[in-house]
Length: 113
Length: 117
Image 1 (cartoon, rainbow over the protein chains, first blue to last red):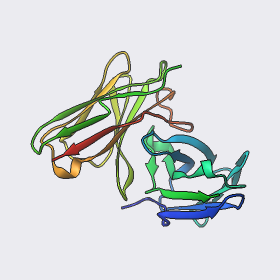
Image 2: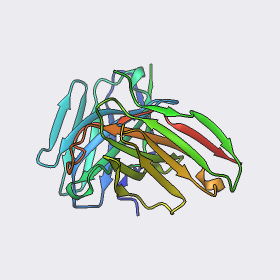
Image 3: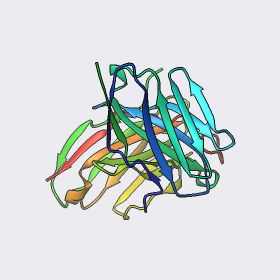
């Protein structure tokens, strides 16, 4: 049972344009969401997060939007740069789950020059 | 400060063998989590340790076990290896307080790539 789903395994975007990565979840208990970026041969690194009491969080070129009623979140990268090419994972946590994060399968973003 | 260190980085084992992976968290971090990454499955939670106690466990068979030492270093062990255990095993540490939850970053190591032949 995949509680966090990233339905697009890959995404290709032109440099300078917007990249939109999507994530859906099924567990209503999730109340904190995070995005991680992973380069080959490296561990994932934290990118941005959002609490369920918000619907938007922005950090520079990165913005995460949360739609609780649709159980959907998205990560917007504007403008996209070739260095953004990586695998992006969304993750969710619930208050009763301690340190456990549930990750999606990941979306591989390719930004073309 | 030094990041999360995992050893070994790569290893090859045969079916039926057992393996031990090691993780040294960032200094001051008391929570250590382990994840398995396989193609198409994303990162799947194995377990979390805090103050030498397992606080949470994922849906993996009992062949997967772990422990945490008083200095917060952690090891995970997989016994009776199967071909399907081939994966990247990632360790992550966080500054999570006792009874608290992860609302911030997990700091991941580079992983231990296990190949089972």
